[in-house]
Image (cartoon, rainbow, N blue to C red; front, top):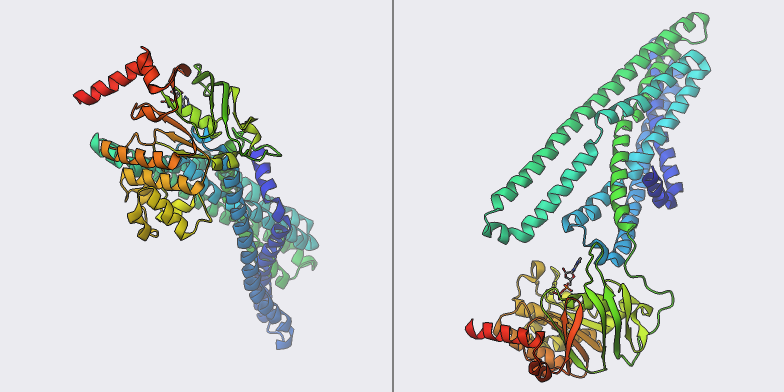
Length: 574
Ligand code: ADP
């Protein structure tokens, strides 16, 4: 229920619009009832062959209600769709706003297909919260009150009877259908989520699945998720048929009961034959707004679940929050890392253990070490994807937690091992780093990054994940982005690790050229061209075990020399 109230709080700004839509919804059903009542009046009255003039009122009523029903329906749809789209837009913006600070630390536990389902389907399901969950019960309630009043004028007994039948249709049938379909919505939603995860894995990992002969098994899993979903949907359809029949049965039951209660009143003159006909048809029409009520409960269940799934993400506390009054990024950007420790949540070993080092402005340092030593964790802490458990990183003498994280990320350019390219044009992939860059800026950056042949292809599509580009070209696009960013500090995190020897050498040369004059931290496990660095820090199990120039480290007999020999012997023999 808590989730429901939180969802209601989200749509609260549209309260008056919703109230108006419910009122007009009521006017629509009311006009339907009025139409049947006036028609019944004309037919019953005409049977007595009265003068034409006595039918005038009835005819005007039929015209009025006939037209009003259509007009009211149109206005009601207009308002409710307007509310729906407003809710949808608000939910999407609210979700993206909330999710952004959670990336990547708080989102790594969610599979991407699952996240996609939350963004698309769960929000889609919540957009109907007014039209399917809040609107129908309100309209049914107003119609029940109208009928209670209408019948109460003639007989209390009839009013009580209609109340009973309306309660059965409005509460009994929905509860029964909910009991029968318990867990169905959840099941269907889970199956859909499962399908999305499997489909996304299929698209992204089709190569691996083919390579290891797992494609048939994967397709079978997708098939089974699909047939599981179909089975649940079939059951759902049967239950929906049942609830419609039950509401129809109750309508007929109400008709008989009301006739039974009112027919004796004809002899006492409380009701005449014409009024009885009119009332009978009004009773029939009054059940129309009760038809959608069982699905209301189902939608409520689905919306609660969708809400819970969204709130589960949104309630996660962001790892990084911007300070209320962030410090401006300093012009002097020497880096001090002091006693820096970090442990990943759920892990009992420290990924970084009391790291201390400084980098002077313009200095080029390398952090090397075997895989798992904690090198990339340093990048994550610099970029504030995570916050250190102990110790600090300062730039220009200020702890980086005092800067706006977005500003910090603008001032530290990062080229990582895997450059993500969006399925957009080259231009859009570049302007990500500098939205205001002119064509000239883009071309200069591309040329400096060694992609002069791309300057004429700014509007060419890069393909899904940049598939139309080679690995070297993708890294060069990342370099062009960094150039456009004009950041004084650069971190290269295994930036050339995925490239072949020749491309690696070329890209490294470009990187060296663009990093001159900037502060550079290169993170790598491959010891290549290490002579160029002002200092090399050797990391092992989260600790700095050695540091110095390449030749000093080679003179020693530590990890660095062992790594170097291992790699160069392997290269020579390989
Ligand atoms: P390197 O970049 O030197 O290969 P990492 O910084 O990636 O090393 O990892 C350091 C240690 O932290 C490793 O033991 C690794 O398993 C662990 N680690 C890395 N990322 C995570 C994570 N998201 N959750 C838990 N442990 C992690």
